[in-house]
Amino acid sequence: MQVNLRSFKQKVRYHQKTMKRFLGKIEKNPPKGLDKLAEKIDAEVWKEVDCLSCANCCKSMSPTFTTKDIKRIAAHFEITPNEFKEKWLFFDKKDKDWMNTSQPCQFLNLKNNMCSIYEVRPDDCAGFPHLKKKKMVEYIHVHQQNISYCPATYKMVEKMQSQL
Image (cartoon, rainbow, N blue to C red; front, side, top):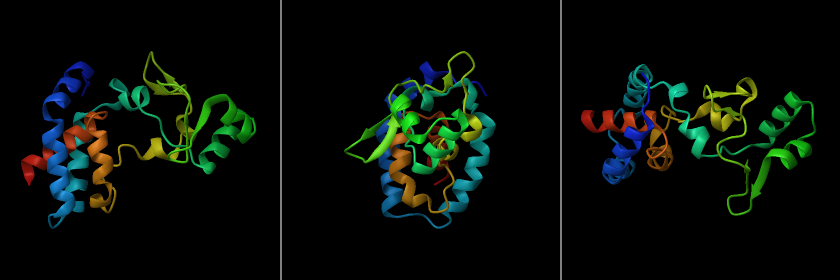
């Protein structure tokens, strides 16, 4: 289903605090079968959210690039890892992560919301938005952040609220 970013951002402004509080309660006292529920909801969410109609993650966030990611993507461009870092990344001293120098992501095609390096994209991108990680409770802090950026995460929390 097509994502309307303006409508999504309005819903976030209105419901974000409640959703974050809800996730905080789940983190402190995880209900039985939480991981199974997350898996079930994940399947439902992807029937309702089309990433290519949104790409808000690529427009407003930066993945972290692991050493493995940097080597793989540099090889794709036939340059050295250092050349790749110099051209497209910066080192975040606080978090000790390699990040994009620009937003939206330099690899995002803004005309069709497709990634130009999709086959070799960073693991962080490939796993995003991490809805059905096996130990969901360990990712609550990630979901609390992603509510603001990702309609799929928002939809997951909305569904969890109605089922728990």
